[in-house]
Image (tube, rainbow, N blue to C red; front, side):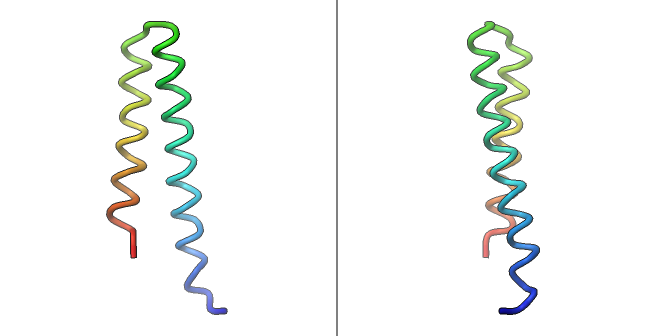
Amino acid sequence: MTSDWLPDRGIRRTVRALGVAGLAVTATGAALEAMWLLGLGVWGIIAAMGIEIVYRP
């Protein structure tokens, strides 16, 4: 096993964390009817998807 998999593991962890946080904030914003929370959550999900697309091998 080489050390090449370590950066990939960090990227996957970051993508998952952004996705889960974005989903949680979006759900909270929908429950509270707060548009700024919805927007913040959606931008978190967009960031996770963007990182996944750019760094996908």
